[in-house]
Image (tube, rainbow, N blue to C red; front, side, top):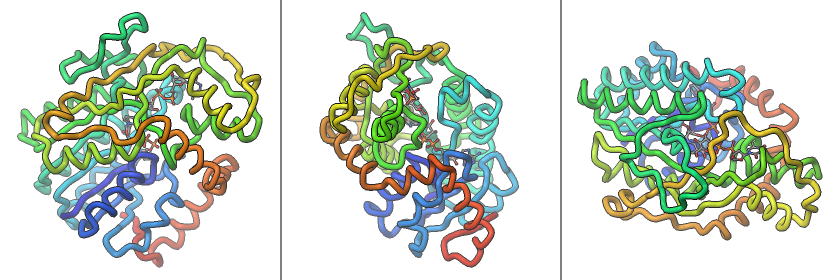
Length: 348
Ligand code: NAD
Ligand code: DAU
């Protein structure tokens, strides 16, 4: 089985590569990543020299590169994690979100059609449903909830989802979609809530909480997300969408206070700042379809997952310090300059 994983140098994609290597050691895995600011080659060090692994630096928007690669590798499965993923950045500069998240998805699907890929899986988000009110705790997002995106990021992901469903219906592309809630765990880029607060607290810097901090997210440990995607790839029905969530709703302020407590840092570091524009209030996934059809349930309780995550950041200072001081991008330049000499590293 040959699996192309796009965006595999980012947070969830890299965790997925490690998960697949452990669960399916016989699979060949090809990571396609253009190494934007969010891509980090050092994350992939543990697999870089593995014989069943190949890294290709390319953009999913580059149709010639994607067609060449797919013709050469004839992948059975393509899992698309590659995206611009940060809501705040989409508010600053929407255009790259449309290029990567919408056009990139279309380019990949055309390459899949040409090479006869057996499964295209689109990694989407619960943000495509918009948000839920705080005073209606009985409401959850199901797969039938209408799309109602709030930010340029979520609008671009919703557009890509519609395109995937259209390619399935019009061209018979064997596609599936998963829409997941907020992930946390190792290798998350420190612009997102949990790693940002963790690292700022360690460095005794201000902890910028948007608005009142009452916004609710449904947190899922990243390995549980990877497991859910693996289930969909093997047993999911083509043309279907699956919601993935942890039934683990927490207010942002609760998370930030918990991080302060676990690190022994004072809550006086918390600083309430201007709210995010169009800030979604509450996300909450109903994962009943995943459970009923595929027998999937999250395995990691938040109380365990957050401690594992905190421990990981404490034990991997070099990883995030290189990001904070920009050195990780220097490593990308070096790898690319000498790339052809390294087994497993490749450019298209
Ligand atoms: P991330 O920002 O950590 O990683 C994105 C990766 O994609 C990076 O390695 C980046 O270099 C790569 N990339 C960006 N543009 C590219 C392009 N044009 N061509 C090739 N590679 C490109 O993101 P993440 O948090 O790991 O999210 C992965 C996917 O999961 C995204 O599609 C996101 O929408 C979705 N998702 C994320 C979460 C979450 O909580 N983080 C939850 C649900 C869904
Ligand atoms: O729900 C899934 C989505 O989760 C994914 O599709 C996105 O790719 C991912 O980035 C994430 O989006 P959020 O906007 O929910 O994540 P973020 O970590 O940026 O913010 C989480 C909450 O914390 C949100 O309510 C905004 C708030 N926040 C965030 C930051 C970075 C703060 O209060 N302060 C901050 O500095």
